[in-house]
Image (tube, rainbow, N blue to C red; front, side, top):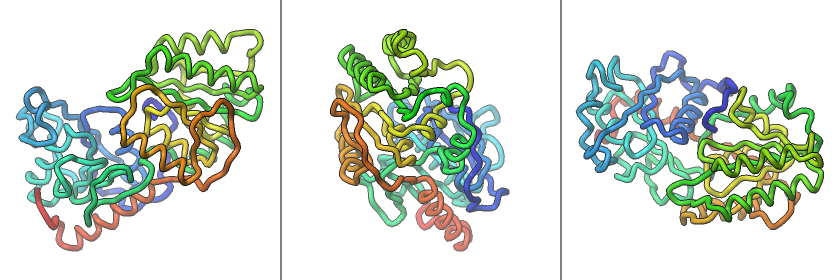
Length: 347
């Protein structure tokens, strides 16, 4: 989750720490977090390189050419310096930069891309996509959930030393993760009212409620939740993070007996699926067939249910795609180096 302050240590180091790595994105939080999670699982200390192509280059991305301002090696550009052993990228605007790095390194930089690059399997040496995307190929890694920065070690630490702001809440505790308007989801007044009703239902049942809005959450909803949490009859039952102090997002997931997540965020739902706690999806207006397919698949495997007016008890084996993706990338990188550092196809 963007903004989480908890420092995470990789659960294992799959590559030598001296392996240099760049993360290339356009700065979008969701893309950056996924890349950081994979880099941590690989045991790497990456440099973040942000490309922000201008029109018309931004319009034609992921197809090139690269914005000249972002040219590889330009002293005042984002791609200056000694080229890395691994370049890890995500987001369509980062595709031309990733391919430019491959060319500039004469094939020596190993490239990995997270999510569908929209130009086929030749976009990078290895590509990860979620199961609900259609891209497939010999160099494509496919998992049900997305990579993230949450680890088993972080969850265990949060349970052993719980955040004081949350520890006083009564059990069972429920974590509510709220997104906001996006390209595909409206989050209009009806959606705000729906989320508020869910919060009231949880509190009326006497559960402790831990609420984490996102940067996209409508201010009207945050105000309504804060007003709800200050009512005398729910005093001591509810905590709403307002952006002050460290972000207890991971701690909320660790301490939750149940999790409520709005349907607009694949990342938040995927992070919730790592805990093993029952996931309740609150549908938000709008939607996209891929996100619907993802939610339907989680329901099919028993990890989630759509909110039906009350919390439900069910169990499932937690999903953690991050180490799976990292191990696959490490294997591909080692094979790549064994071939002399040349890709099978150089874009």
